[in-house]
Length: 179
Image (cartoon, helix red, strand yellow):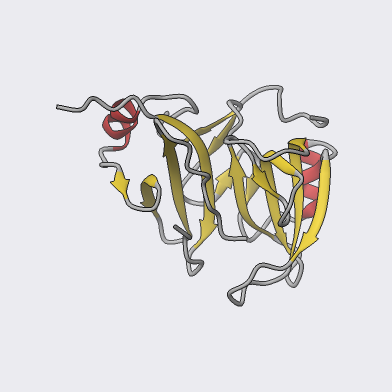
């Protein structure tokens, strides 16, 4: 029997209808709860705007405008905990970087928070799942099983949002995210 020792490395929150593909500021202080209903601390998907994100998380380390393929709306990415090199616990704001541990993606058409990525320990899932928690403990907390495919994830859904909790194990698999 193979014992998994996976750790939670990212939390990706996306609006329903988006497909889930196979530091300065205050992000290091305090904690923030991410819920399947679309809450990220005091923020909420499809409601909070750029000013609300900055009021909540502080001035971003990096900010880029981008356009993802697949018919997604153009976005403004606010990045925290950023660097110039790709890392297993970071995602690019645009192709080629910068690479950030926490990113708030603002839909440029609506001006509202569209999706969110983090691997920062400040954030935890609303039912108690934390960055670094072993897979078995996360499965017990959520009463859900890990789904293995092009990534290892636990998927949660509500009427307003989908929450993907991604895991990484023996070999690095860069988490993908919808912009």
